[in-house]
Image (cartoon, rainbow, N blue to C red; front, top):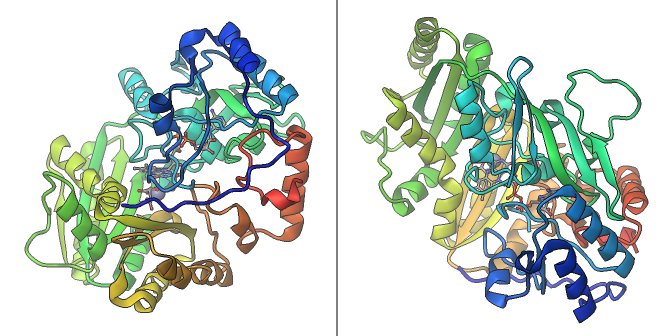
Length: 465
Ligand code: FAD
Ligand code: 2HG
Ligand code: ZN
C-alpha cells in the first residue's frame, strides 16, 4: 500500500543533533549502540503498518538502566526529543528474567520479547497473563507502555491488575524504583499506574514485575459459526454463565475478516468449509481438569446448537489444530496489511451496539471499501478496519469524524487497547472530559517539563506549549 503521511510541524524548541552529541552518546553506549546509518534507521522510522514515517537521525540502544538514565539526562539538558521504542509493533502511529515459583511473580527487563517470556515461563509451569498476535516481536516494556489488552484479558484482566511493579527512567534521567513484587501495597499513591498505558510520554520503562498465572493442563478451543450478530451476543452471555471460571478467550471475526485471512495468508484452511457464515467465534477454555472441562464445553456447545445460536463448529483435536484456529484470528491484521491500505479503529463499545457501527460504515462507504469487524468480543472491544486499495482522503472524510462521534455518542472509547499515539492525540476529547485532559497535561508537564518524551503524541500538543 501507499504511505499516508501525517505531517507534524517540528517544535522549534527542540535542538538538532550535532557532532558533540554523537561523541557523548558513543562514550556512554559504545560505538555499536549509536546508530546513524540510514538503512539501519529506516525500519525504526517506519511503523508496522507503513503508515507513519519518522525522521529520527539517530537510534540509541542502551543496554541497562544506568546507560538509559545518563542519555536521557543529557537529552533533557540539550532539549533533544526522544521516542522510546520497543518491538515497533504499535498500531497508532536483552534481558534476564527472574522468577519466584511460589508467588508466580516474574521480574524482567523491559526489552524482553513477549514470546521469549512465554517460553521462559512455560518451562516453569506458568503463563504470561497477556498474549497477542505480535508476541514474536513486541517487548514487555512496549506492552506495559501501551497497556496492551490482547487475547486473554477476558480471563486475567488488564495490565493495571497484573503489573505489580516498574522501574522507570524519567526525562531528567532520574531512576524511579517502583519495582515492587507485592500483590498488596497501599502505601500512598500507586504511581506505576501512570506509566502503564502512557505510551512513553511520561518516562521510559526499564524493568517490569508481573504476576503470572499457573499453566493449567486442560486447554480446549472451539471454532464456531453464527449466522447473525445477536447469536454472537447470546453465545457470549451463555459462555460467561456456563463456562464461567474456565473461559479464557472469546473472540470474533466477521465473514469479511475470514475471507481476507483465507485469501491472503498462506496455508490457512477454513475449519468450517461446508457453508459461508456471517460470523465466526473462537472460544478457549483453560482449566485444571481435562475431563470435566471437556464435559462443560460440550454441554455448552450442545445447548448453543439446540438453541440455534451456533450453526456449525469444530473442536480442536490437537495442538496443531488449536494453533491453526488461533492463527485465523491472530492473522487478521496481517491479512489486512497484505490487502492494501487500512484505516484502523480500536473501539470499546457496548456489546449490543458494537456491530451496528460496522454496518453503518459499510452503508456509508458502499463498494468503495471492504469494511471488516472483529476483535475481543468478550471485552467489548471492536477492531473496525476499513480496507481500500490505496489511501484516499475522500474515504477518510467519510469515516472520520463519523466513527469517533458515533463512539462518543454511545459512551465508548476511541482507543480500547492500542493507545492514542500520533493518530489520535487530537481525538482524546471524544473519550475524556476537558478537565481530565487538562490534568493529564499537568502531569506531563510535571514529569517532562521540556516535553522531550514522545512529542506530539497522546496529549494534544497545543496544551503543552
Ligand atoms: P512499540 O511499538 O515499540 O511502542 C509502542 C508505544 O510504547 C510507543 O508509544 C513507544 O514510544 C512506547 N514504548 C515502547 N517501549 C517503551 C518503554 N520501554 N518505555 C516507555 N515507552 C515505551 N495490542 C493490543 O493491545 N492487543 C492486541 O491483541 C494486539 N495485537 C497486535 C497484533 C499485531 C499483529 C500487531 C502488529 C500489533 C498488535 N497490538 C495489539 C498493538 C500493540 O500495541 C503492540 O503489539 C505492543 O503492545 C507494542 O509493543 P512494542 O514493544 O512493539 O512497542
Ligand atoms: C488484534 O486484536 C490486534 O488482532 C490488532 O489488536 C487489531 O489491527 C487491528 O485492528
Ligand atoms: Zn486487539
